[in-house]
Length: 444
Image 1 (tube, rainbow, N blue to C red):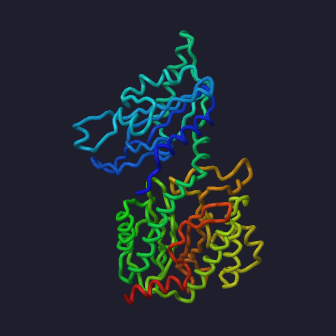
Image 2 (tube, rainbow, N blue to C red):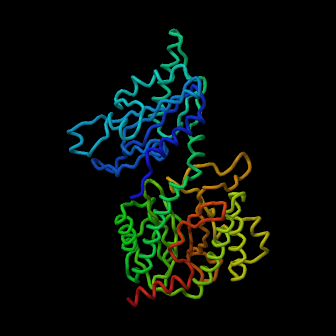
Image 3 (cartoon, rainbow, N blue to C red):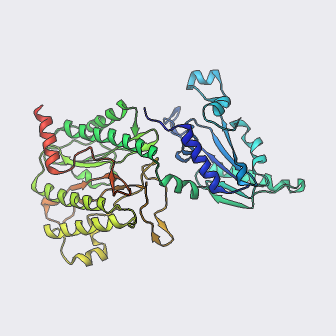
């Protein structure tokens, strides 16, 4: 099993400390446990940015990084976490404890999380800048504000509260946006597992199957490889594919319909994100094939536009032009190509963007603009490319033969000096490849 090492987590803390500058302190809490219903919690998953810095996956933890007057003096990394507790560990599992925080996770010092309020003030006073993730957890925001007030109240002792409070996400998000080789290796593993799951779905689908049965095939591959879904899986048969965030997955898959699957797994806290659309019976109808090939052409061209130096929006512009021209060629839209694009009337059939950042979160952190300008692709950025066409079942402006068809094709693309790298290329996507794969599965 591929995992990041503590050396890599330390390198991230080193980088953050350098970006913070001298005489600063950063405070970052992990996610709280979330209740599903009554006495049942959701399976715990650490906050992405907290884990990014620490590699620590337990709940009830706070990391503090303090720099000194001179940046050459380095910094101190403190981890507040749960203490070892034999009784609680019998019920809920092993804890690293205070010793483990130092020995296993390389904290310079550790304290019990119950001591946070008592110990944190000394780490805040007389610092020039406090870096904190404002707005993520309301209750923790209140605690941080109270700590700052307590630090300010020590002015009679000659102490001061930080003069500036800066959004920590401004630093962390930019760090997370540019993936290292190790991160890309984890994302490639997640992508390969997800590709295997989509392949299995194509091989096992049949008319009369429930959407959730097909979802179960995906989950089997995820679970077999020690993964969980990176997001709520979409398995939309027929007109359900026209609902962008359809997650009920509780209808029958019908002969002659397409099924759209937007599903992927998370491996070691790194996500993949794949969408494929294919016929339930293994054969595209003429109308399905015509629309599908328009989307595929748009996607291939949009992927090629993920070039270092290109605007983030360039793949979208490329995809829109091909989609609109395809709709004009089929007679589904009428008018002038440039006017349709300018007016955005194509949004009747294509109403979302063509991609988003991908990483530890499926909709990953990182700004899309610098000021008023769309930012450009840089080495190590990962973006999804996912054009689609959706013709609503009740859209009477369109010939009935096109209605109720929804198609999306999505891959995960890394911007590299050698051009776009497709992490999710192991799952087929041309009409010919899909039909051949499904025919082979049916004959086996």
